[in-house]
Image (cartoon, rainbow, N blue to C red; front, top):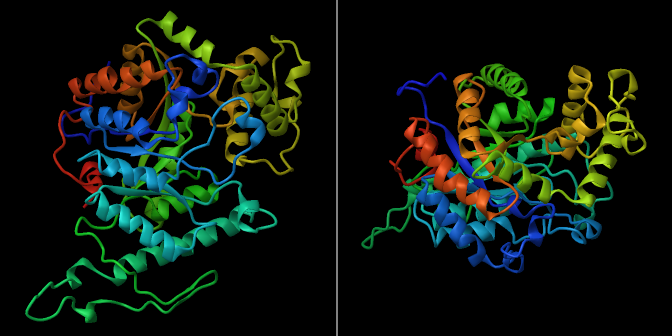
Length: 438
């Protein structure tokens, strides 16, 4: 097994608080604490566990839409507002970064700038923003139909520009606090008078920037437009990379795009989601994975496969292979064209059987990198991907039970640290410092 040198940048590791360990059937376990998921205290212990492992950040994805039919079978995205949750966790932690999710499609830039800067102050420089355009939820904001991806990203581009200008409109250096003279140097403050295609905003912001500097930006778009957006504005990209080959392809593409935008090739950290079903033995991990799967999961998978491939797999035998010749053109709307394309690439390259396809992460509509096994299995896989130069780190998505979460923080991460792939202690107190940003 190859090892990285001590001069290589260590892994960046975040923990998702999307209660992935309660997905599928897992919420039915007696020890799930499902009754507490809308109580901020439920997350405090997990946040402190992650901080004890010296993780870079906590991450909370979000949705502004919920399907009652899905809610009948699992909690899904039923959740507290992520920014308010991170604000609560800021009071219970001291070092770990707090990355919230906020949509540029639905939330006005001034409100975004103010809320995010407030979290940055409350957490003493530990905030991060996962910039999303959202895939649905328009009906909750008086929008008849979801804007096209091109329009959503054009709006996001302008929104991020405005938010950054608002953060700069009231610089921390303007604060004088001179009790014998002026409170602030008003000449350092800027009225934006911004007039763009989507927004007209006067400014300045009502609170100063934080002395830790602007918060890091994260992005998850994997379409061509989304990748270009990430290469232009993001410090890290949350990637759907179900295989090493897909991770290497993403890395190369993002590096090329970053350079085209005048940034260094290493400006954007590649952080795929890593689904971890961990057990003390491989048999235990497999049993945990199988027990987490529900009949509802399979029916949703089949519906997604039908939409993305044009193939009704529910009518096929488990050993029937899905081939490229069976695919129909993807000329109709799908919820996520990125995930549909990943699925179609799998069929083109491997022609999997129906049974095999249903077990692959691509069939879930999320397409996360996945390890079902022991801590050692996960350790070897992460080491392999890192040594290959495919990743800068990952977002841990523990699955199956709280045990997977505990093994991730208390066994896997310390083992990575022992191999020199991760820190053994915090050297800074802000998220920018954790990520190695200037």
